[in-house]
Length: 327
Image (cartoon, rainbow, N blue to C red; front, side, top):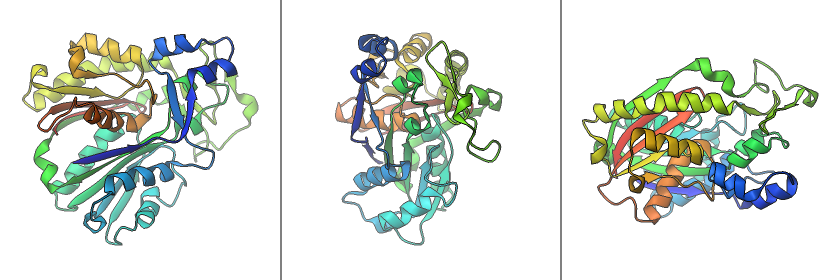
């Protein structure tokens, strides 16, 4: 496996929030959600642009001719059609024999992507896969939605997988509960409901802004879903892989927010030294949080060759997934 990430150049700090919303305190934002700054895509910068940057980094020094499949996870595509992965194939100069597809998934997107990649490799459909997560959630947010703007950042990550990685990717546990769809949603803009007038936007007491054209998140309900589903998810995936928590070298959850992650760590009884919890400089980058955390953990020496990693994603959908991999 080889992994790389890309973060856009624009940085929006908590002090910038304080200047825009004088009744918000920069230090309290960091204390509550564990985020000091987040990277934001530029006005003309898209998820496809960021996917290209992350891909170029992971392909640096590699033979591009060996890549025969692209999997691109995003919920902020350039177009309804064509597929961004198809455009990325041409931009990267990959062979016309390369398979390519997008899949629409949020915070569990990296786990599902690994599952898809494992299946393609195991079936002999592909021999080397470029898996990319790229998200520009900032473009889904209402300018007045200070609560969600304080949490979400933009970013992309790419990982190269080939047939030699199959023994290192363990068993998966995946799940879905579509009844939670309305608790994290962009209602308008697609075929069910076209974009509507901005006059319907409503400010909520918690600092969120409910507009059909923009992202809405019911924070308490998302928290409840997470604490109810994730502990059982961890238990199930460990059982499937015939491992105990003590045998795991490092744990990386989707980086939602500091409070939620600490709550889960304590509830599941994960030692702090084995647990990644640091979105301080990037914020919640949705499907890219886990691979970005992996890049940072590798740079810090927390992940070493042979490390057993427990990776857990959960969120919009509701959707969740977990896997154990050996680095």
